[in-house]
Image 1 (tube, each protein chain N blue to C red):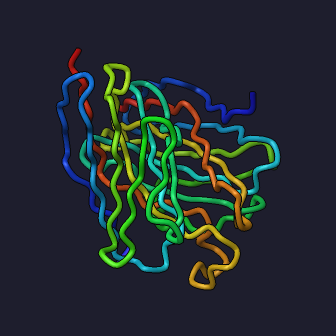
Image 2: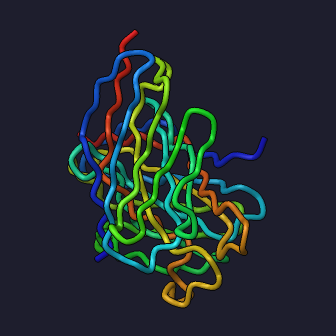
Length: 122
Length: 118
């Protein structure tokens, strides 16, 4: 019930195109859904995140769409650039103090998807 | 510019040797995580601490791995004895939890320690 499933494993997009990565989760107690971006030789860095009380969040060219009933969320990268080429991870956690399902010890514990290697061709 | 630091960045060692990885979390963060990244398994949570107390180390092989926080500025991950299958990148991350309404809940990752066991 803690799994987060991510697809596709790899994605090739032309410069200016739209990149779409999808994730599905099982545990309805999750209350925080971040996307991390990782460049080779670096640690993952938070890109954008959403909470289940909204269906969409946009920051610049990056948008998260969230479907609570389907237990799915996705990352859309508009006008994809070669500099966006990286590995993207979706994740889920319980981190709000009001979440009684966290049991006090699980706050912040991230469950990651398997990652998507994005390549944007010039 | 607050960041998580990890040392060493690279470590090559022979099977059977002890390996110690160190992490300095961001000042003020109360939760520290250790992750392992491999091509096959992706990012796996090994252990984590809140206010220096261990909360969950179920992701670690108990017979050879140990994690500690001697003080609020230092977390360590030790492997003894190391094996070739331990070759991976080990990340430390820190954050402040639980969050209040409106807080971002960001978890900051260090640059990682790339471990190679021959």
